Image 1 (tube, rainbow, N blue to C red):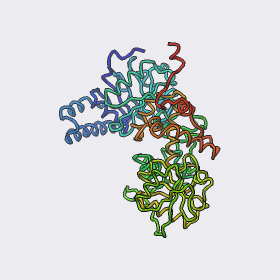
Image 2: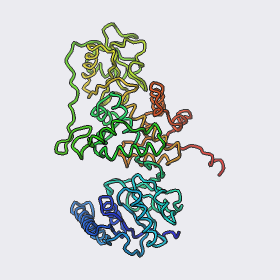
Image 3: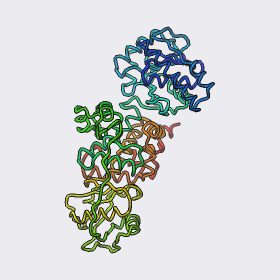
Image 4: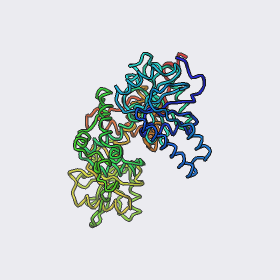
Length: 510
């Protein structure tokens, strides 16, 4: 197939919905001539007017020079039918409904009428690029170019070569994406591509925690925001995207990887989908919404009780003990707790019960050490805890002024489980060579809004700690969803960062 003689200058966007409009806006603003097409002629005209109106608004707000806005409007053209005769079109980007046969039929028709050098790109978010391209006589001209909504604001674009995509196309598409001011990442033609694949770590583990009854949705979200630094907790995220969207994606990725346990969906997701508890769009999901506003339960209220001394495990006595002492709490310094002291332990990759071996369990609470007790304190309560001792422990922790979440004791604290799952899924992607470490981290930061990519995050939290959490979870539950990735285990053993590929066989043969 003939390559682009130079850089692409003209593209046709097929589909006048939200994605098509966004792609057209981005491309026209980036200097490309954009032909907008759809089988619905009226939709094309409305989309063109909408995008031109966006340029006017950007200029009015000073976010785009008036001359640039006028030039971008001139580059946007309505051509009507998708198969309207082509001239010098370098790229077609389809943004039609997410249906395999619809896309295949469109590409079969496009192949017959497009110039030989025109690249055919699909904006599919979930369908295999290779399967779409298989309908063509020449599948080498097809690739995935997955934008995220809203396109102008979401700065990452997945470039997805199919099994038979011509070798020059991914680099050409990546160059085009950079020209438009976005960041390309090379993604595999595998279930979920890269962003949605990596995103399974957070939401599936949150649903697992819910299914165990270890914490409530608001508990998980507050911990995710305050301890892990996420902008939005996993239950809030599921409500925003809608369970009708999220659960089928979870099932698709799980089955697409032949029931890989790390991606296992939850019965909770299926039940909520069938009940119509979809999230914001239906007014109720994990939260209720009134006039679009989330109704979140209040923070915990700790009853006033007679103060008792506190004994803090030596592993965290310097940090947590100092915090409590500063708040006026009596902290014991001995090697063993007195007969009246409340005992605080900091479990890592295990339950409070396991972490408190040899200590008086009836007076022991767990406090998650993740976050270094700087923001929110997560307190774990086990069934054998004496209620009076437990209330005294909560009162002592409340005196620090920190926000506090009280959850049921589980195989490991909530924040640890969420982060370990995110890191492990990212390491699994790297282990299978589905994407480069830098692309994994970039895709997750830009596509999911995490404070760090999963590999960077693992290094920052301490890969050894993450590995210990996963091994503890795997040992205590027997669940293969927690088996550590070989990428993680190898790099801990070698003392190498998770973000580095290291030496590979081809390095020795070059």
